[in-house]
Image (cartoon, rainbow, N blue to C red; front, side):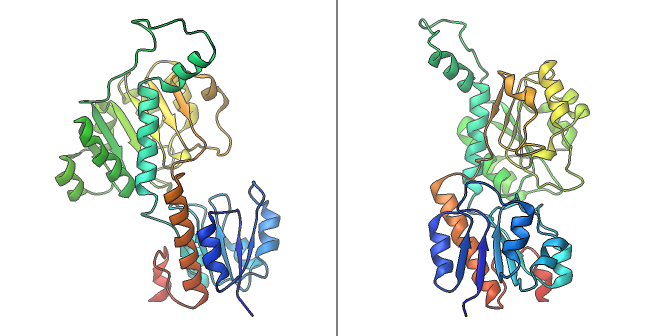
Amino acid sequence: MKPKVLITREIPSPGIELLKTECEVEVNYEDRALTRQELLNKSSDKDAVICLLTEKINAEFFDSAPNIKGVANYAVGYDNMDVNEAIKRNIPLSNTPDVLTDATAEMAWALLFSVARRVVESDMFLRSGQWEGWGPLQYVGRSVSGKTLGIVGPGRIGSSMAMMSRGFNMKVLYSGNRRNMELEKTTNAKFVPFFELAQESDFISVHVPLKPETKHMFNEKVFKQMKKTAIIINTARGPVINESNLLDALTKGEIAGAGLDVYEFEPGVTENLKILNNVVLTPHTGSATIKSREAMSIMAAENILAMINGKKPLQCINSEIYK
């Protein structure tokens, strides 16, 4: 009998087809996340699951899935997974790092330019039929070249973001738990304390994982430290920014703008952010390129095949269970 695998939402076909070579695969083809009860019911007889960030993989899930041999997250982040609980039960977990690095960094740049050069705002104006021709004061934005870019979290994506800044001759500051010597070598980036970065940067791009110590790291105190001309970009995790404090800072003119791809109460968005012209909002599409999403599906499938065959997946996030 073939192992049974659940994919909680449709992913690109290469990963699905790879799994079908060895497994019986059930896919949620509806364009929505499974309800909690649906997830628990559908997982009850499965040997493995590919899940999204919308699914909580915790003790309740493991209790409902007695045959489970592993869970693969179709994402690089895994704050939806109780890693300690999986370790207790000797169940491997995996994610999809590396393959979405450049795609997410590119998205951060897309947001940065969209806010700085008022792309969405001016696009809507033109489409409305109000434009009557060029004017010297129309939608004047902010320069990017030669400015200071602050990278919060110099991991894979943050480093890629910084590398891309070289074409714009930017000064790069970064903060994190430790120095990234390769980043310093390739971009001449300077390692500084978080508050110094907040004070000195013209653009701040957030690339930290969601942990207790990073939740609301951008709050009222930090926004007051930032330049009034500063723009913040977040393609990491929504709760890293206190959205209420962000809204206040934008409304009061304490900072100049924001570009967000992730949200504190995702999929909910703080309503009044939607009406601000100095904010660009995208629906968590940081990794949404054909190349990245297909590579993610293959990586998740390969991890699942390793798990059900009793092997350590290459992208294991709780490798201590194999020691």
